[in-house]
Length: 247
Image (tube, rainbow, N blue to C red; front, side):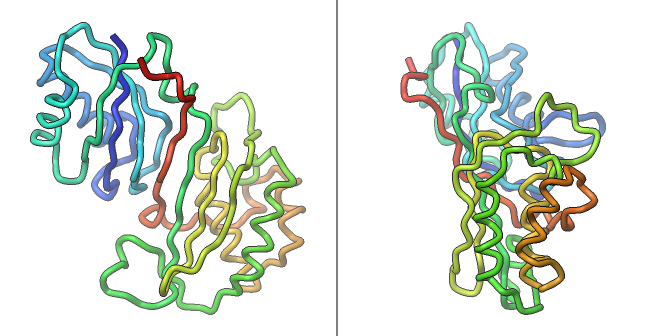
């Protein structure tokens, strides 16, 4: 049987989602826990790869198992076994060919920027002490919808077949003493969201003009875009799938 597992995690202590040598990852911790509880080797496939320090309010993954178990019981045991920074929301059966990564219709990310020094959010939001022109940042975000190729925001030497992404949402919102950037697309390139936000911050600071975004995107050159903002303020918030993927 194939199962989807719905989870969240604080990424501060992990070197991203994906297993890698000599570094602890979220995927490795969950695989080890599942293997011990199901008494078999389990490999899980995530809906995407979050970088070191990035958080997930909503992550999906799939795994295969012939072991008979209660989904609710497994959720309870996993949450008892896993560390405090990883939580399982649900486990459920899906169609045999359902794929957490390839069948995802969209992914949504949130980036938090603090406009005021705050001792309670320095590890969850990026503090920018200079004045930001948020209206210009909002205007720049709307230009993203004119493009599909976002190579300029991708890490270099990334092994992908295409740099095209279908943009569905890109908005800035005020939230108390913070501004939040919510971006939704069918897929994202490595480092893409952090590079977009860094470029928007440069526009908000007046170091770039709104219209410069056209030149940056058309260049397809990562060095033309802005800096990558810190990972600790980035959250994967939602992954959507077709309604008929469950059994």
